[in-house]
Image (cartoon, rainbow, N blue to C red):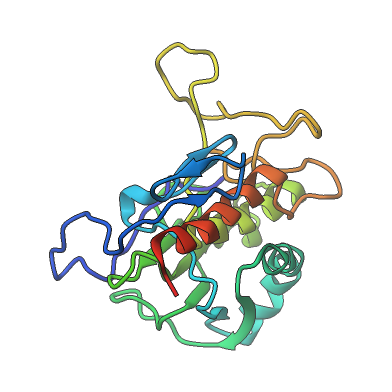
Length: 244
């Protein structure tokens, strides 16, 4: 199970207002072929964390996943490799990097997504955390932190392999600009946990649903088509906003 997204910002100390810093141009969205006069933040099965000022993924920014120790890298890379390949194919400039000591009191180096472990990082058993940061110059994703609950590995929290695989890439999705994509499916006025659209082709909710969905078979640990549409829109928003 993964946490509700918490977010860091490169501009907290500056007290910057919530505003777009680039003039949007008319462009075609990545999904649905619609024409938009500004960035698009929500679609079927995906939602962008625009409320936290992450509007787009810069296709020219090198994003690099790093780890605090070689042991942590060895543990997580097998779970990330396929999803990273999916994102690269979608156009995200993302690589798996090496070892780097994180400083959780400040933002990471530009483009860095720092994976680590902590005991109950949000204080709730079994919950992990993805923390995106935004670039104050253009509201693109700057980088972020992932903290995976160490209880998954020490036997104090029972998690299936399928759930584990999907959780690890769910948190990566947060650092790259995607929010939980739940919606009011039953029109009762409340957006509840597990309430998210199901892909008619595969019957599962998106990885970025809350609690995380994703494939429940051998494809676990890969993003669904809905998730990938969200990442593609993050890239399309960079074009709309003139980010380069």
